[in-house]
Structure formats: structure tokens, C-alpha cells
Image 1 (cartoon, rainbow, N blue to C red):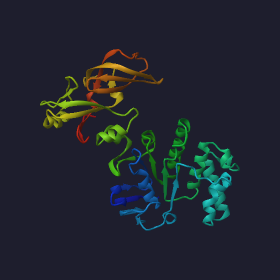
Image 2: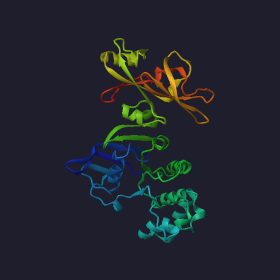
Image 3: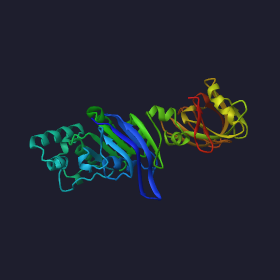
Image 4: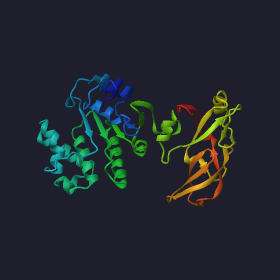
Length: 365
């Protein structure tokens, strides 16, 4: 297994177009790291630079302690799985899996053993004689993954491999990828814009925006202790609610037309210097309740806008004086559009962000 080290990595296509801005990142050997961010944030470009498919403008990339800036892709000992399957249509599954090993002139017995082991692990061993046109999308993606596995590389790179699959298949193949990492323990970098994939697969997540790292952390850290409004808003489904507020002299918050909230002492101390200034209160949908059950639950008047029953839960979008508010409620709670209710915010799990740049002021979570 090999770790990956990025030091002040930059990428520019010309003087006016810099897409990666001084990225520093350490990925431990055997770690499953996910790059996540909106389209155009530079996550795929960063991965392609690690693979050697994109040149590096500045900085260093090291794999297993060896700087690989000037090495071609074939000498970096990495295997990449792309969004499109890139299978050879005239070859059957077995030959697709074996092709890379044949190019490397591996012994026939070794090729056969590796192909069959990979096919069995991915549950495609019964498909070895089929051509790609006779496979489903999920089966084709498993073949593409198998082609990477048989090489036994130092590093796996996945570039949005599930984006062409339907929702059910994405879940199934995502599970296979996680099992694969648990079994092989190979260092893995996975690129996605889907925060559900990021949260469920990653040991650590890198959140990117405009070619810069916004935060690196475990899924729990990213979700519960976001470093900025951008990170908080990008994770979670539905994402975090953001309500307009003003800080008070006592370290409290005034929402909308005067609903007063008083956070805990630690957060209040950080809000006092901002008295009179605009603040954004962040709170997750699961921390908005239909009734108060703890002393940190603070009431706010709200009108029901949209009700979305999902079986195990119901999402309700409210209109409040401070902005829209989504709550994740029990399906036993009945509400209808147009009704007015009092909902309760759990300030013990709230976050406060600066209104101007979105920086985290403090968190009660």
C-alpha cells in the first residue's frame, strides 16, 4: 500500500485560468479518501494530476514517498475507473479483465487466477463469456472495476464511477466498492459530486470549491462540525437550513421580525463582539422539531409550505420570518400546506456563520 502526498499543487491552463490553487493534502496508506464538491471545483482535475493524465503547473505529487511529477501514467502504478466504462466491445468480460495483464506479459496462469478472483469478488464470474452489449449498466461498471483490481495497483482512482447508473444500482455498486476496499485495503481516491456517496464511502472527505480545499475531515466531522457555511450547505440531504439573524449585546440572536434565541455560553461569547451585525444561523433538518422535548429547544412561528411524505419520515418545508426552514419529522405528525405551527429549533446543535464570507463563528453542536 502507498500513501499520497500533495504539496502546494497548482494547475493553470494560462495566466488567467488557474484551476487548482496550492493544494496541500496527505492521504495515508490504505485510506479511502473522497473528493467532493460542485461541478467545476477541480476535483477531477486534481485526481487526473495524481494519475498523470494532467500535467502539474507547480508543487509536487508523491506516491509511496516517490515524487511522480515527471513520471508517465503507466509508471505510477495506479488504476483508474472512469464515469464511462471504456470496455472493449468486441472482447468478452474475461478478455476485458485480462487485457491489461496480457500487455504486461504476465504468465497465463497468473492472469487466469487474478481474473477469476476479481470476477468472483465482484459477482460477475457467471458473466465471463458475455460481451459488454449483453451486460446491464451495473454489470459493465463492475467489469471496469475488475479491470482495475486485477492489476493489483498501489492506488485506486475512481472518477464519478456511478453517475451513469440509476438510484438502485448506485446503491448496490457503492456497497461493492466499500466491500472491495475493506477486503483489499488499497489506498483509494474517489471523486463525486454526490454528498451521499461521499458520506457513506469515505474514511475522510476533502470538500473542494473553486480549486481550493475548504475542509478535510471524517464524515462525522464534516457533517457535525463544518468549517464554513459552504461546507455545511454542501453536506446533508436535505442540506442545512440557513436563517437570517442579528447578534445581540447579550450574545443572543434575533431571527427575522424579532424572535429571540439564546445559544449556549460558548457560542454566545463568540457572538457578543458582533452585536448588531448580520449573522446566519445554521441548523440541520433533523434538529427542527414539532414539539419541545429539551431545554435547548426554542420556539419559532412557521407556516407550512410543502409536505413531502417519504414513508420512514416526512420532510416539511416551512416559511418563517427569517427564511425557509426544512424539518425532518416523524411520519406520524400530520401537517398540511397553509397551516401555521410553532416549531422548535434545537440550539444545542446549531451553528453560526458570518453573513459576509460564510466563515464559522461558532457551534453549539
